[in-house]
Length: 184
Image (cartoon, rainbow, N blue to C red; front, side, top):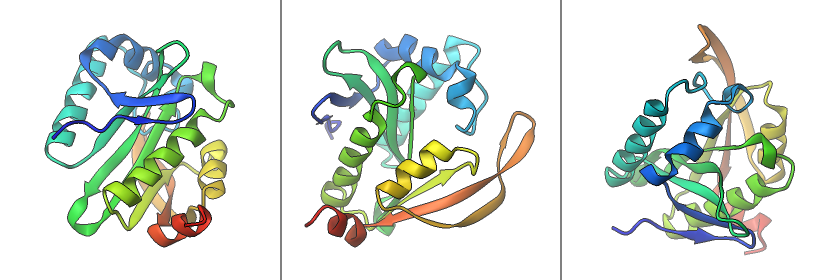
């Protein structure tokens, strides 16, 4: 099965390969990126290699899809976005994403998210896309709510990071809610 490449006005969402190792390591080694990511910052490039291998394994086992977010203007990888915990038979997945801080506040996450949501509901025929977000991650919560996600509640002690347990919110967006918001 060929990896689905997607495009928006400013972005190309592509398969992440080992040729993107430096970009992935450069992004996920930054504490401000991993602060709400559920993992500690990468210290060694081998951690990025292992993550890329996991993306490939999850895709081939139909358990997840992760795209590199590439700027069309300069072909630079600025982050990743994808579906975790993909369950095609149950028609659900969880969305996750991160961007290099140099590209925060430009609407790139929103642009990529909209494309992935369209793909999830139309191509994969999912019924539900969820998100797990730290309560302190106000920017991500605001973005998800703007796109129509509903906060379903607090998961206490759900993620263990930096030697402590963290609460998270669980949010969701259902297919008919997305379609209604897009005027379909």
